[in-house]
Image 1 (cartoon, one colour):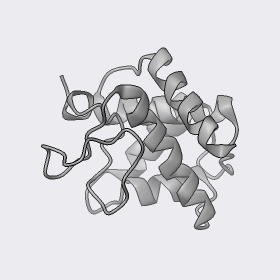
Image 2 (cartoon, rainbow, N blue to C red):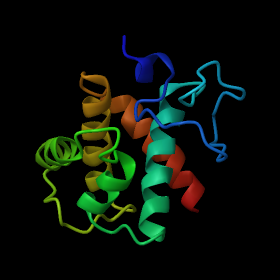
Image 3 (tube, rainbow, N blue to C red):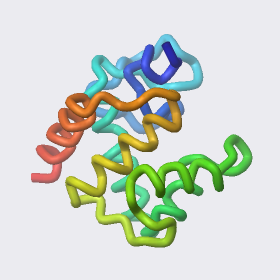
Image 4 (cartoon, rainbow, N blue to C red):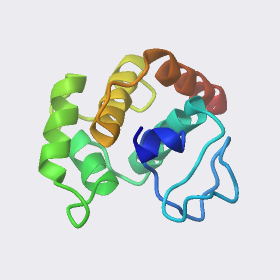
Length: 135
């Protein structure tokens, strides 16, 4: 099982000052966040991508370059993998409030991070938690 799945952190979100809903605090992983269940891990991915949008990262390319920077990743490979799996062109504007688009993007990112397909019910549960926080 991958580290991201063990931590209920399918996006492998690194430790930071931001505390997400459902985050295990303190985490037993010094580098990556841990969540109480997978739905909260997916919710954190939706929240983080929306924060990127609000900071001016509008396209999938801009978001992936921020999320998976070249100093740590093969960002171009990551971008094209997610774009192809999600059916979103690299320079398309990402609508972080669009259920269908975001489910596809986050599921693809999870697959890239963990090497296995995301469980659709977990991604959807994460979206439902995220969507509730928008109200």
